[in-house]
Length: 111
Image (cartoon, rainbow, N blue to C red; front, side):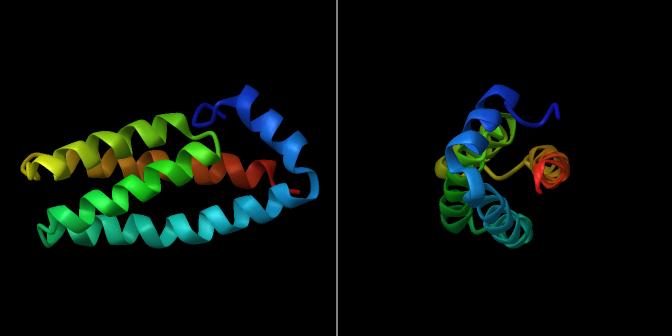
């Protein structure tokens, strides 16, 4: 569970109780689509939409205690904001890989 802030996700699970699984389901369904969109936006050089998408993804990831993933999204958002998409290949790949780790860890917590 290295991809999640364990203390924070444990607290979130206690607070949300029966609604925790719904939160995870919604996050994963949404994030699966966003990850694909982020890759497509990067490949089409759409910096403005990439910035908005990664900003939204960052917030959603923070909400499920995936702070490392949110930090990666923040760095992509910052680059897109400045229009600097060159050299983001590694960051996009890291985002995708880290998301898969987060997804795995969240599903392991799912009842």
